[in-house]
Image 1 (spheres, rainbow, N blue to C red):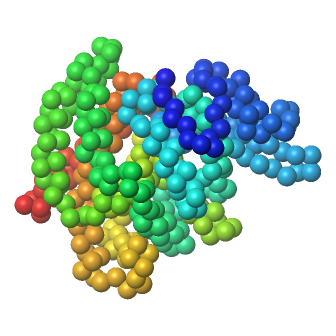
Image 2 (cartoon, rainbow, N blue to C red; image 1 turned 60 degrees about the horizontal axis):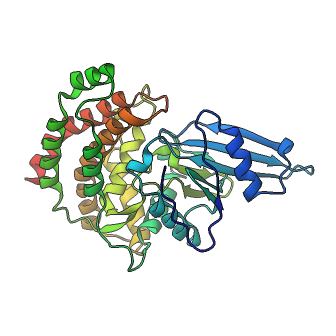
Image 3 (cartoon, one colour; image 1 turned 120 degrees about the vertical axis):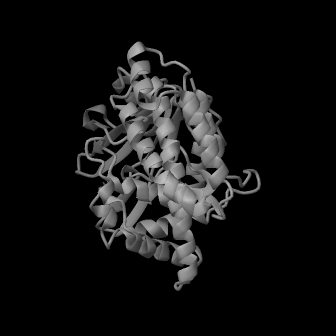
Length: 354
């Protein structure tokens, strides 16, 4: 059970969702945040983009045809082990005031209800669309200029988070099948911990500035509203201060797709594309429509380096999920894909750093 720290004005709903029977909890939450909704007019739909949490779309259709949608997110099993839910709520509320995150309507024991953004999540085609990617670059830059105030220390979260994930890896997985699959691919947890220390020694000296970052901008976390020509970000579980180049690199790593069957590293963005993207980003971040070629190149180099850290972080994260998650997803295979990419690229990038 996660600890809930409420602030003034937060609506708390005393509901604990049963993962195997979601509807009773959904109706109790809706009764609290939308008491005027008539149950027979509510259409529930389980959304499947996420691989950490369960997400329920609640659509209400009034007699005059007017519709409203509220999203209800139920935290995944044991995710409170590695996600600071109090910080997540704080960050969403801070960003919402700035127009950068949805409004939270209510908080319950293992999740919350929040505003729905109209539009479509990105895919491997729309993320490189000339109408779309500059909007993403500018939206990220706006987020990177957010200051959480003096109460939140401006230190990068990524090293502590990676170490936390490593500490959560079991020395032996809970079933013989799980352990056998893990050992056949990765040999041992010790080997991964040693690799992490090497990675940290190379990358912790990066000159990339520390900014308030999303840290998980996979394609499903970016909403494009074609009618309004706007981009919105969702799912701020891992939002925290971090290296600027990590957030950009992490987004580029997601261009290849998230479905295990469809991941294709031939779709990783070219250098020319990345330079254009970084130029648009810097124009917004620096409030300067003409960033220098040197500035753009420096960020590009930092992005290539920190792409390694992105692969390693989410590879280890996936190995933790492999032990604890109840969601139907092959987390071990996903970890293998991300860490294979890390090992394929690390020598050439380490050589450049050296």
